[in-house]
Length: 341
Image (tube, rainbow, N blue to C red):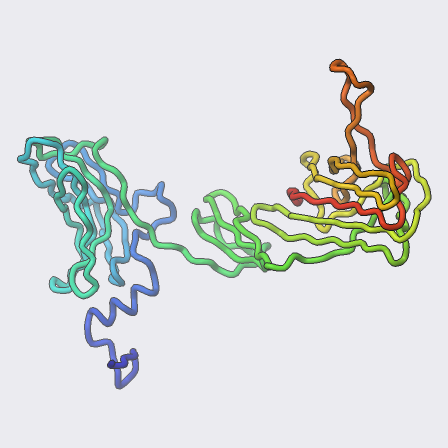
C-alpha cells in the first residue's frame, strides 16, 4: 500500500487523477445554478439538426467547465425504424484534457453514463428523443436532466441573513432554514434522542389572575417534550396528586413547554384513572388561542343529554372536583403534537 498526501512542497499534485480525487470533494458533480428554474446549461431543441446548450458552468469529476455563449450541439441522425432516446452530457476526458458537451446516442432507452474516474466521466444535462428517420429534435422532445451542485449550509445570524437565494441553507442556533427565492423557511430543528423536561403549571382558568392548583407537595408532576421539524412540538404530561385541592368553578388548564400558534385551536388526548373508586375517562384537551397561547385551556369529556338516537352529543370541562373528585393516587395523562408559534 502506498500513501499519498498533497499539496506539499515535496509532494505536489502531479496527475489529473490526483487533482480529480481531491477537487471532487469540494463540490458534487453538477450545474452551478441558483435554481432548477434557471437556464444555466439548459438544453433546448428547435427542430433543427442541433440542440442548443445555454451558457453556464459546472463541476464534472472535480474539473471546472464554463460555456460563455449558446452552443450548438449537433444531433446524430436516426437512420433506424423507431424513435431513439439520446443524451446530451458534459464529458470530462483526461486523455483529451478537456470537458465538453457531447451528444451520445442511445436506443429504445437512454444510454448509460460512462464514469471512469481515471478516464472519461459523464454527467447528464438533457435527454433527447429523435424520431425514426429524423435528424432533428423539437422542444417537446427534450427532457431536462441537469444535476445541480449544492450550495452548502452557512452559519447565520437571524438579523443579518444573506440574500434569499433559492436553495441556500443557513444554520441559526439549532434551526436549519432554506431559502425559496423569496423568503427563508424552517427546514428542521435539532432534536435530541432524549426529550427535554419541564414542570407543568396547573391552574383553574387561563387568565393572568387564574388560581394555581395545589395538587400536594409530593405530587408527581412530569412534563416531557421534543421539538420536531416544521414548527411542531410533541408533549406528554402526567400528574399523580398527593392531596385534594379545593373545588374551583373554572376549568383545569395546564401550561405547555413552548407557546402554541394562535392561528387555530389545537387538540390533545387525555386519560384520567381514579384510585379512589370513581372510574376513568378519556377526552380531548384543546388550546383556546383567544385566551392563552401558553396553556392547554380545557380538558373536555363527552356526554349526551339522553340515550336515544336523537340525543344531542355534548361535552363538558373537567374541574378539580367535577365530574371526579381528583385527589391522592389519581392519574391524569395528556399527550399530543401541536404547532408552535
